[in-house]
Structures are given as structure tokens and as C-alpha cells.
Image 1 (tube, rainbow, N blue to C red):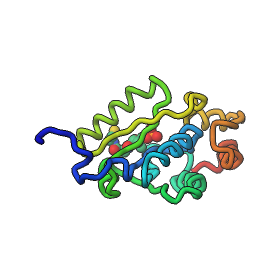
Image 2: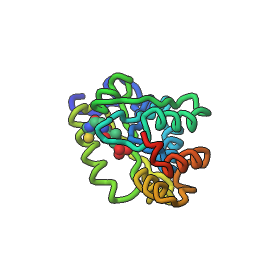
Image 3: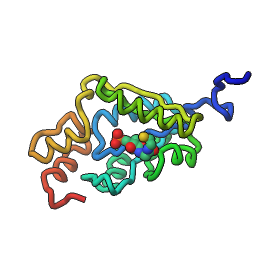
Length: 178
Ligand code: PNS
């Protein structure tokens, strides 16, 4: 029927494969929470690290990817890749029809709404799905982790425990910055 939304143009459920994109500079407990939630919903999840040198990230792409790969190692249906250029182009290359994003608070909404509708305009076949992390992670962001860590504060509970010491050491020693 014309105009009717079908499961997908391909007749497959949209959440068969999804992209979870971000800067992950560095990965936080909020990101990790979303990855675990998405893993339960999606057959194949691609965590996609933005490779955009003009954003001047604190952690190199290699470091960000290594941290994420270490976390997802026990999950065979989750992989970590990098992308540059438009997210929807990467999703198409990957054969994914959905994008996962986390929303922590109302303050995230405007940016996420703008991004989701822009992506929909660019590629109407790709759906954005929003997930909420546990409320205890709702005030954590990569920017806060970087700021607290660089000023010598304790980032326990803000980043996955297995990575805490390495992230702390990197942030406390500016000479190590990528
Ligand atoms: O973790 P972030 O920094 O909020 O993630 C933002 C990201 C990487 C998802 C976004 O910047 C992005 O998709 N960049 C790729 C360029 C693109 O597709 N832009 C059009 C949509 S706004």
C-alpha cells in the first residue's frame, strides 16, 4: 500500500543490524550502558568511532577503538569500527538500517533531534532509535570525564572500571595526549 511504512525496504526487521556512533573520547559508563542495552535488542551491533581529526580529540582513534574493543570482547555480535564522512553513508556501507543513540537528559534532546531528523532527510530508510542509560549515568559525559581526570579528580564510576586506571593515567599526563 502506497505510503505505508513496511518493516524495511528489504522486508527485514530494522534492528537486525544497527550502528551506535559517537566520538567516545573516551568511552564512559553511559556509553557502555547503551552498548549493553543495544546488544540485547540488535542481532549485530557496530560501535562506530568518528574519525574526525578537525575535532581535536584527546584520545587517538586507536586508543578509543582499543578501549571499546576490550569492553566488547565477550560479545561476539558487537564489533568496533571507525568511520569518517556522513554517518548515513557508513550505515549504508555496513548494510545497517538503524542508528542507536543514547539520551541522558532533556538537554540532549535538541541536538539529538536535529541529528536524527537530518539523518532521516539524508536517508529516509534509516531509523534512529533512542535508548536511555541508567539514571546514575545521566550526568556523565566524555567532556566531564576529561575535565575531572585532567584536574586530578577521581573518575571512578564515570568510566568502565577495567579502563579507569589507563584513562586516569592518560588524562593526568598531558605529555601523553594524542
Ligand atoms: O558522541 P558524539 O560526539 O555526540 O557523536 C556525534 C556523531 C559522531 C554521531 C555525529 O557527529 C556524526 O554522526 N558525525 C558524522 C557526520 C554526519 O553524518 N553529520 C550529519 C548528521 S548531523
